[in-house]
Image (tube, rainbow, N blue to C red; front, side):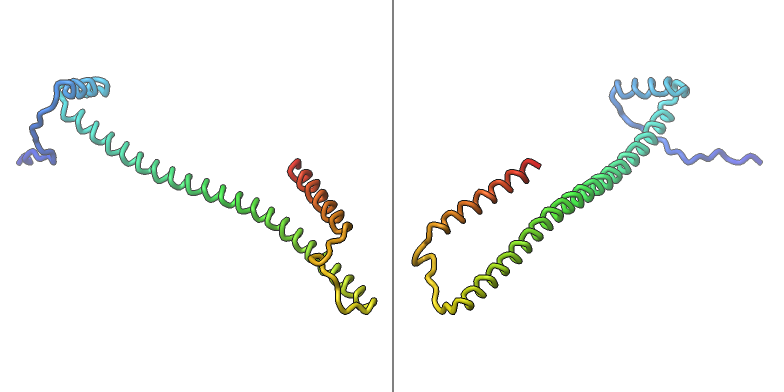
Amino acid sequence: MVAPYTHNKKQFRYRIEPDSDQYLKDYAAANNLPLESASLALELIIKEHKQLTSEKANMNLMSQAISHNVTTSVQEMIEAGVAKEVNKIRLGTNNTDRNTQKLIELVQGLLQLQNIDHIMTTDMNTPPFLKQVDELIESRITEQKQRKDNQ
């Protein structure tokens, strides 16, 4: 007994533009398909479309991963640079604090040695040497800033 012919394809009837029909015929010819097999050409086009859609989705995922990695790397580089600069500022501040504490101790010791109970503040009388010292310190800071900017 001969088994009845079965296949898993369904028959449909579609209306398409003439240029789409010509595209199917050209596709069939380019892929060595029988000239009258527009349905096989259409199936192959659909498979290619599915594959391209899948590849496009994979490319989107890959580009998102690459973008994330680049963003993370740039962020780490920026943070490292900022941390380095903050560390320089911290070291400079610590040095200034140390020097200020030394000066306070020296002045306090001098005042005790001289048995001075009351002092005249600069608000009461600003001596000329204090103006000279202010100018000197300001020029040093300006020079250091210029040297740092030129590095």
